[in-house]
Image (cartoon, rainbow, N blue to C red; front, side):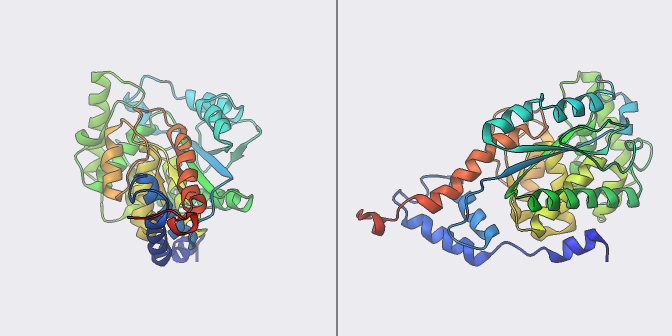
Length: 349
């Protein structure tokens, strides 16, 4: 059995019993029921993931930034040159990107994973070389990847989740880097939610109207050849190597019963793939924020996930997800540390 198949077979839904216990405990804490809003839902979700109430407070968050290049860049879907991917990977590995600064603020590590950058990268601290291919092919003209490449990239993500959890991480965070990767994301969202490309394709790094037209047209051409009932086929046809690795990362975390905070539209599109491959894994994921990319809202609604933050972000890298880490920790801490009415001697209603 392959690593991917083994991982999927090992995933079980989060504990319904622990979630019920957490919901009951929420009603006993010294606060009006429901007064902490989404944090109460997150706390119960963390209890379900850990299988115990109250759940442990995550103390060792780890960000994995998966990087890859995209052949659809040739369609003129972005004004940024492709070499920016490799340059930004160096910046990320050197600690100079936005997600690095935000990760330092919340005490999270950052690991950069080259799963499909078009250039050969020099060794660097915090950079894992797991290259499956030197970028994808042009999804507008044919399959972006072979099924074998997509599977290999999925298994890269599983391996990175195992690596980080084995190193002590108890909360994983998704990150990404890849020029033109919002085009692949919109294609995945359109295919897996059965939406029109025009409804889920956004401006990414801030493209102008003619570029948006080219971007949408490239996705529309790709949709014509898809078998949407086969998630691995969809991933190989229109996804990116970093999307595949992110999907594997999400599955690997679920197999290890570790929560994952999703970033923006790249992570959401990967989550759609992972959920299609294994619906039970969805219960292990927290939507960190709502990206301004239209596909993010469509994808989150399809997954049934409510974003913790809505700050008008569209950077990627894991930046929005990292900002949500303290909220996830706070949700667990409320269940763990807030006194009950009985223990505090406070009269209830």
